[in-house]
Amino acid sequence: MQNHSYKKNNSAAWIVDVNMGYGHSRAAYALADLSNGEVVSANDYKGIPEHDKKLWLESRELYEAISRMKPIPVVGNFLFEALDQWQEIPRFYPRRDLSKPNFQLKQIYSSIRKGLGKHLIEQFSKDPKPLVTTFFIPAFAADYFDYPGDIWCVTTDADISRTWAPLDPQRSRIKYFASNGRVVERLKLYGVREENIFLTGFPLPKELIGGERAIALKENLRARLCNLDPQGIFEERYARALKAELGTMRCKTDEQHPLTLTYSVGGAGAQRQLGVQVLNSLKAKISQQKIRLNLVAGVRKDAARFYRQAVSDAGLKKSLGTWVNVPEFESRSSYFSGFTELLKTTDILWTKPSELSFYCGLGIAIIMAPPIGSQEEFNRVWLDYVGGGIPQNDPKYTDEWLFDWISSGGVARMAWNGYIEAPTHGTYRIEDTVLGRKSELHPLPLIV
Image 1 (tube, helix red, strand yellow):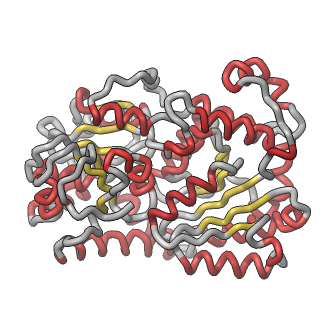
Image 2: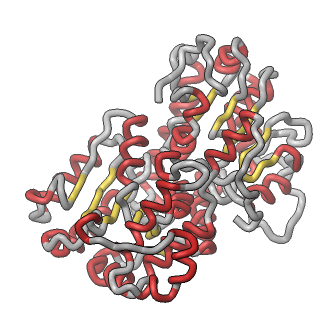
Image 3: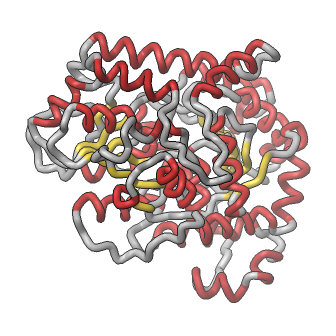
């Protein structure tokens, strides 16, 4: 992904993200085919006015600093709770009118009236193709400054705060790609017109889906279930459903990747210590080549060094690069492509319930680290609801409880539940809608 120079080109749409954390960029990366691989970061693009850059930088640094401080007793929790209340998602029931703007939304529009985002929208207006953004502020700016093309906003969590909907939702031109059914209903409560809401599911990487027939997804799932069901307990109980969906299961040891757990930290680098606890608990199993561990630190080189040192301290230096991997990425775009490649042979993903919760739809079992923030609490509830993930047990004893769960077929069941229940084809639905094509995909049930 590269920032665009705004010259006229033959791409179908402008794809816009913000490089705050990974969630918004992860969604944009999956949609980059619409823009010939180009993604424009609204807070970091060539020619961005200093005024805009300063506003964006201050908000990102505040969030990342407080996220990293959250594990600090008392002070960290106090600061994070204050920030979280500012962007809190109100309770859903009883259903009621929630269209009144909150304080955060009023502050955002105050900045837009002072010019935030105007320069970016002026550049896009020179070639007004559909604008698809994975963050709400560029959508608000496009609406406010009368962008001449269609304006689409992709939601990136299982529930959203009032801040995602515009100040005057009834008059707004912004159309939404909703990540699940709860977001559809939430947008209605916020006053967004129903004809402006499209239930698509979160956009997952095409490389992990393999087209509308999900060829790559099913192939990866077969291999994954072989690793996650060593006793054949899950296969015996679900034999009929497995055969109907995936065909006859064939688990050939010589063709399989080893049982693989990927631990991933967020963009702010919080919870990296948890990865070390997992590593230390599993070190005997790693030495015995019973499990492979990926410790993914994103683009944070300090976190990658931290993990390599932890591997050495655990006495696993000889396993580094084979049974323990600490991938390092030079850029955000190389991280997203590299992480996607890692997931092809990942059986279990251990992460906080961020936007990665939606990756359970790939048939990857999710172990949830403690959530950070209101939206992650809702992601946790959704992931538990679809049965694709479960909260972590004590990480110090991962070598015991994780292998008990695997032996029982329970982790295989989580992978299967995610595949069956969670949306998988969000990327294709979004592309079809933006391009004005009739989709061959079945409509999603509102429940997810």
